[in-house]
Image (cartoon, rainbow, N blue to C red; front, side):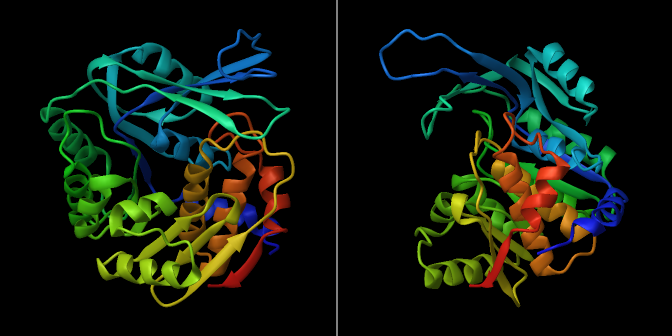
Length: 326
């Protein structure tokens, strides 16, 4: 698949639309490179980094890597907010969060570049009152309009109802927005009844929503059909090293690319979602959108931070993407 020459036009077309990403449970993502790491020892950290993250923010970062700008919003706890917003401002990621109580959580990823696999440590965020969601709904009403693309991604803070995404998706789509959803568990199950424009579950999240893992092609086809049956226009299932599957309800395409020496898997699903947004807003057909989404997700594995993509990696990988029917 060779579309790299058309990238400037695709990116420019995508940039014309207003894109808002929503992160309800922001996080500081800290990555530590620890040679020889194993349980129970004391080790030297050879490299470390920390970024203001959360799945919606990661999508904004991936979009910005291709000069497609968005506004990052959501619920931002007071504890650590200045450091969080300073990092976003330095990156040039526009933001307009609703501020809440509590402290921003921190996730830690431990990497040993000499060994495969990663170790993840995940903190819980603060418990928030239901009124926080009402305030976010008002914020979304003020910063979106008909034709906006609104991306809902990630986990819910403690205290919020599992109907939260269902309510938010319904609210923005009643205004004529297109809702993209990447969620899991009960919040995903319930949000499907609000008929989001686009859903992007991974294999485990399909299990959350439908009660079975689509490990075989026949199961994938069944799952895609069931998700479309809720009224979802586009379904993208991410499958890690096996790439993605993208469907518009009429046609389904699989996309896969091999990556040499990956360094980071965190945020690859968010990057793939950003690639699909650019493809659809840029007017690409289903196959080319699938290839671009796959290339974005793969390019993310070559960087040390979630959503920190290089256009050169995207261009190279997109030329190597394999496309095939389900």
